[in-house]
Length: 88
Image (cartoon, helix red, strand yellow):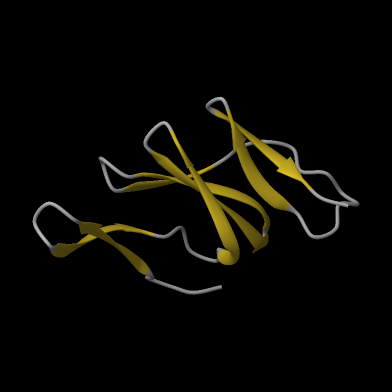
């Protein structure tokens, strides 16, 4: 994982990047994400789980949900405002 890794948000109306919250330590982020209801959701591989990032407040939160043990190639998808994890 990475220590003291921050995120930046681009504001297209002002044309500027702004530093936002620190990514939780020891979170190895996966590629691919979804946005729903003002939050960015992304999977982590170590530890296996998910994070959400509130785009308005610039705050990262670990998602406290049980993760399937035998899923392969997991991906997040959004449907009607709900987030689902799919995989093999």
